[in-house]
Length: 113
Image (spheres, helix red, strand yellow):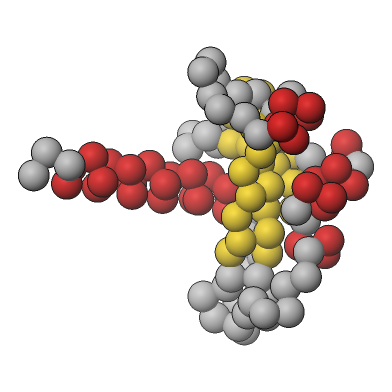
């Protein structure tokens, strides 16, 4: 994954977006699907990477420290192998981020009992 990220040309990165469609400050997304072996994943799977400036106190890997960004990668597969719509990577990344927030809220809600 690190090789794929570092091999990306700077023009491969696009602005990440917020729920209202505005640009997410300091965050960029890119697709590395063609740079990763996905033979074991369903046809049409995609790998999206987000890089953004870390928040204060964030624990970074050595790679992130060198790059100066925090990197997050995820894989998404089409619901239907025949799905022809290819959603923009920024939209997929936003959906992934929103889902993570929901899971975090559920986990926090279960904590108090």
